[in-house]
Image 1: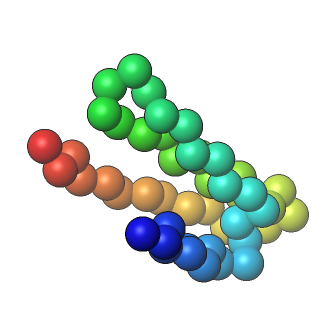
Image 2: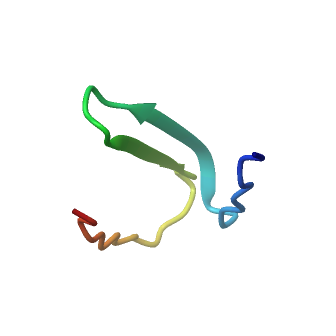
Length: 47
């Protein structure tokens, strides 16, 4: 099975994905520091 390829907006400078001790993952998006706008992420807990 192939892993999906995700395309991020141009303001995302990098992506880090880490697995925790449980079944969860940490997704870290590194944002380009030269941008002046602010970003808000609203996430839902699937469990």
